[in-house]
Length: 134
Image (cartoon, rainbow, N blue to C red; front, top):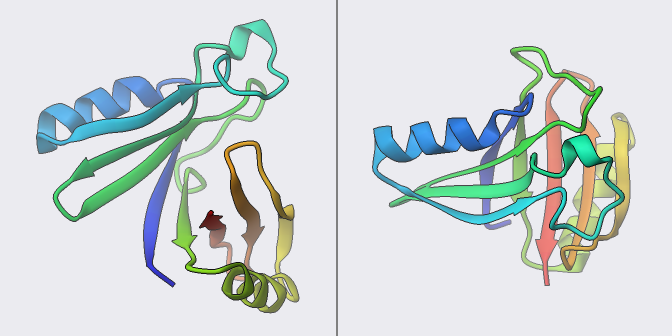
């Protein structure tokens, strides 16, 4: 495993939050993509929402996105941890062990952004995003 990365989820104001963090921490926003730019079925009212972005300042790395319309988050449920893996074997092993007792939000699968990915919530309420970028 490479690292754990906090993933922040917003109710339509991810870009505002990222711009704020950019000002506060003097970092940079990268990999910014909207729902409208992604190859993902999206209603017109969601096209300008952020589907994925990264914020980086030195060793600090955050990922962020907006919710899909109608999927509002509450404070406390707007954070998950992304685990970046170094191989398909490693992500599969961890997914199999973690999913045995967790609620699966997204099965381990190939994604439109070119990664192997899964999302699960463990028995203790922690959401894990498992990602292997090929």
